[in-house]
Length: 456
Ligand code: UGA
View (cartoon, rainbow, N blue to C red):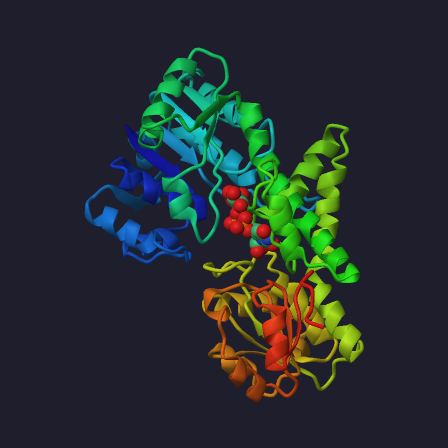
């Protein structure tokens, strides 16, 4: 079985690299010539631990290659994965432009049976639209319109751990609809993922619409857990309780479990914000009100501003003349992804209040600079007050406060003596709850986590 992956972005590249590592012959297709040239030369346009090595190894062994030639790539694959972006449209719904133009392209080049697998996160009903777009092109070419099947196989990869998530999946969701190709499509997907189903089957079979909705439901549930814990943390702060005890106290209940219960300065990334919004829009379009998901978003927007509000409570609303250090810019560790990162709203708000900001991130510095330039278009005076530090300690020089926004490993055990010596006022607002409040109290550093009981 040969695989073609259409779209060499994050999901496409990880899927292609992993499937080639499982022994399949993979072709990655993208219309971006520059990107394909870079990939052919061994450069990887995104930062994802392990991806570069995996691609290099399989490229050298001839199992994966990259092309812009749609005709040849579609001819090659028995299975065609659609892994292109679904960015948010103005109203928050998912923009299907890329997915549907890929569908038309498939229809223009298809000659024999192909299994079209949708991996992009798409609203319920998209597979039907993909089917129609392909069939439309086939009819236009005078070809029979039943030489393909469209199924759904959403991805559940986490950035920063994507290779591991792919290679050791909790579950594989596959949605296949009734029809003449059903048995064949199921067999092909079973063969594709056979390596993961050797001991027990991890594949959850369902119909296409349920698979499409499963993806949104999973992300919305995870986002809701985080917003719920953030609200509990804020209440714990008001009551003098500690969210870390509460997390363990509730996580021990098997029905709840421990993961995704970490309070902090809000969630970001390309998935939770986009998918929760899209789900609300889908529901609205069908006359439904997703109150829990809407509230999840509102709580998150508020939570991103929590550290700024705390700074203001201490220093007043005018931060002119204040130097603020920031550790961590990416929306989470092990990525340079700045999409919807809490750091963006935090830094912008600090700059608007007159503060000077010096920030450090082990990987995302350059991406952060670009994001900030986008966020501050026409406001060059704001950008002038922002600079990137070369390391975490340099960010602290003369600072009145340190805000921690991403829990990179190298922030876990810092040199507290050095922090005290470098900062004008040793004051840490920890948006990721990295430190023990009692230890910081003993160091003589003013410290506030999110929902952590402070030392008395
Ligand atoms: C998320 C899902 O976890 C994946 O399963 C899914 O496949 C992916 O979206 C997607 O739809 O493509 P990702 O956005 O890469 O993955 O990142 P997560 O690790 O889920 O973190 C998202 C955000 O939640 C981060 O900002 C993180 O800091 C925050 N978070 C996470 C918390 O604030 N608390 C937690 O307990 C966990």
